[in-house]
Image 1 (cartoon, rainbow, N blue to C red):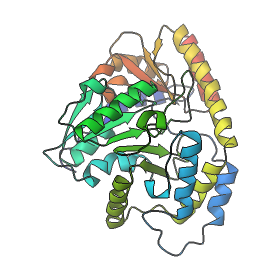
Image 2 (tube, rainbow, N blue to C red):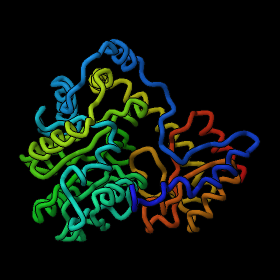
Image 3 (cartoon, helix red, strand yellow):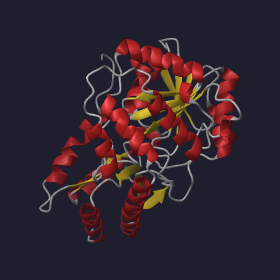
Length: 360
């Protein structure tokens, strides 16, 4: 699509080549892609549903929407029903296309966090809308037509509390702008407990004007399945499903069955969280001992690290150790002196990274 920025990962291709040349192979901590096995219970549900000759619906099955609603009501403090749920093809689909689906155009403004996943801005550009950044509810301009929230944050791992989330919801309702919270790291809290925008402590007794985006990619090792959801305001969900019908954005029937199984099983989520927690402790300690400060990083799959130097210089420093990390300015100018270090590598690779850092 004309006018979109270059894909940001191309900027660290050279550092990637340096890291790959290490005698003991690269340790890639740049992209948060899961590396652990998809749980057997999910694989079995997928296999059992492979005889699926007909088209799925854009809305998904009632059973799928009920599974998401049950999960949100039990785990996120929400009060939603099946009419307030739409499946999505992973979470990135809806992040990229929501501004377009909602009819935004060149006269519209999308507000995104100061440090943010690049696709929020790209989604605004795809709709020909402008985007502005904000630090808190008070700094969201009255001209905003859509407000993105991301808690736990990618890249920082920061978690907004009830008061902060409530203030953003109140601001959105004040100016008539939907508030959409990307919560795909919701079940990976470390030193803080993530709060959903659908939590009744945040949005009150009504889901008016609020939506939450969720994904199974991280908590269930299902990035390859592309299964997510958007939940909340029924009128907005109806519009989203209507647009997805026309666009043919249909979640495959076997993936719907796998999603239902994933949402019904809590044990695999706790096991995977424990695995990430151990990797986090190893990397956190190694980075601190190597002279880095870890900021925010209360939840999610990343450590937001700085040693007070330009982020690309730090990326190159890591590359010379055979480790690839993401520069903080991928996520906005405020990240110019940070790097994002992912926890998504095997135990062996995490220990290797820690050893290299100790020898640095």
